[in-house]
Amino acid sequence: MLYLKNGTYINPVTFEFSKVNIAVENGHEGKIYFTDTIPENAQIIDCNGMFITKSFVVGHHHAYSGLATGMPPPAKAPQNFSQILQYVWWNLDKKLDADEIKASAYVTAIAAALNGSTFIIDHHASPFSIKNSLNIIAKAFNEVGVSHLLCYEISDRDGKDIAQKGIDETDDYLKNNQGLVGLHASFTVGNETLKKAADLMNKHNSGIHIHVAEDIVDQDLCIKEHQTKVVQRLNYFGFLSSSKTILAHALHIDENERNILNNSNAYIVQNPDSNLNNGVGFFTRKGLNNNNLMLGTDGMHSDMFKSAQTAFFAGNLFDSPQLNDVYSQLRNNHKYIEKNNFKGDGNNNLIIFNYKNNTAFNQNNFIGHFFYALNSSNVEHVISNGEIIVRNKKITKVNHSEIIEFAKIQAKKLWNKL
Image (cartoon, rainbow, N blue to C red; front, side, top):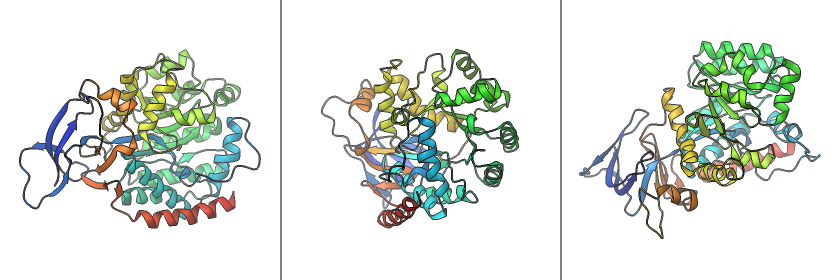
């Protein structure tokens, strides 16, 4: 049992502040308790002057991009989203080998932990190194102490044989692990592969995790090749019936598609920094049920403070969300996990902030501080499933310095192949 002494607990839903000691149980089923007594020789973190609240979940990530920071630009500059995929990300994912996947997973998990996230919903791609790739990622995440919900990005873009390998990898992984059936996007997946993915989803009582209308090309090709819109196509194959299904982006959808989504069980995850970076448009919540909206990073970074703040500030240019709307999206990531009985995001997943506030900080203005002042630099300690994975801003369960050196070697090797 871990004890957090003399901290101020902030309820992540009501924002109520309580000056307390907290007993934290270990494990996926662990709980937290407010207590007046702390046993002698107990494991203690002194939280005097600090604030404690629920940690974060990254609602959509790409750990395979973990070695991309600073990589050389493509030989030809992309002029649109399709070319960004072809010249940058599909070029990178084709080159990944097992060690590069491992390094990417390590650095992603470490970054997430240092930024206050203890759970990652990841969407992986390595078309020429598929077999066992999900287990490699899971092992690295587990070693750092970050819980996860993984999938492999099945796609026909590299041929039917590779698509089948993605299906086989997914099937093997889901036999022994919680996870999802990953698909790249409608415009790179034919009907035969979609049907196989639907069968796999039903076999494992899972959902799909797919990019939806991130760029208008997804809609244009769907209409051209299938005479329907993307959301309608996914609905036809039964993907939207599962509350485990995650649709990333959903930028270029019309009113009818929004109505379909509102009457479905699927969740939509916004990725504001990535959308701005790629110039594909910006998410609008108009006509959508806020209870089914989540937040992610799309591999741009691992900082959910940043995602929430970008969603609000940039959102003011498009549909003027309220602070509470965006904060709810951030916390809907937890509701998604809880609703679908996934493990690893219990109440014993916590962040301890070292935040020297210059103005009143209380239940009534917490959300203002969250968007206008708090950031990842305030994360002092992080607890995942009752275990300390960040203490005094340092990773505890793995040798961070060794991983940095390993990642540098793998990044150089990867970049030389690009």
